[in-house]
Length: 329
Ligand code: NDP
Image (cartoon, rainbow, N blue to C red):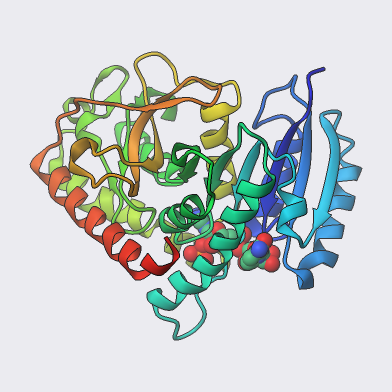
């Protein structure tokens, strides 16, 4: 057996955390041969709940679970961390403005960025789920002195997975047939699923689904509103599907599961200026990954006028968020 991967999960006793940690312990993030040490961070009032999660993890008798750390101290949670899943964040309260949410969460992610820089392993990689995820990742990266910025990412994979499912249903094919589906931009209702460059069974998606009105209308709004639809149906926000998307995100990036030849996946990563996205913004892009920690933004895709205009709006939102937290960068 290899050395355990040290995986930090913040907000580990929350809804997404609860759906995530068992899957990491069972080998779904890093494969069936890689042991893991879970470093679980919670706020002090949630430590009892976290203890309960840890008891259940023990009761799972997972052969790959090499150890656990439970703590409310970020320095301890990030000690020697190879992969940090930053899930914990403050939810938007009643009457709270988006700017307040940005500031409150910004304070969490400045501290976590510093704690990661001071304590994590040299090969650290960070995936942010807690919202506003892209901007939280930007703040953490800016405060993690000495850690290369490209090690920070935010999750747009749930949007990609949601979009793929809707497209597969419409075309009457299995979801595995839908490939090359990038989600551009912010993890917010402004995100853009790029159906023009997507494929179904190797064919251009728009040759298989010719109803452009549906693609630009109902499809887009279904993906945008999916989170709300789940809250309405379940009485609680989506959690298992968010955890599942994070497993996909990390497994492709550094869990030994490279993107298949010819395909790509969506990750929000620091822009290198590609496609006119201002350098440094953490923006959803199509990427290829090697499964061992490297990724590349896919170059040279042609965006339709529709996608280009939507990309402009989502990038404008990311710039507004960045400007609202400029004192933390
Ligand atoms: P969840 O586990 O449901 O959500 C955690 C974060 O993920 C939220 O910011 C949420 O955003 C975001 N998120 C991203 N995608 C999704 C999605 N598809 N569905 C739902 N959420 C999504 O929240 P809980 O309140 O259950 O748990 C949060 C935990 O974090 C708590 O246990 C709390 O104690 C902890 N916490 C830890 C901190 C720390 O470690 N320092 C700091 C703050 C909180 P959105 O709110 O927009 O849904």
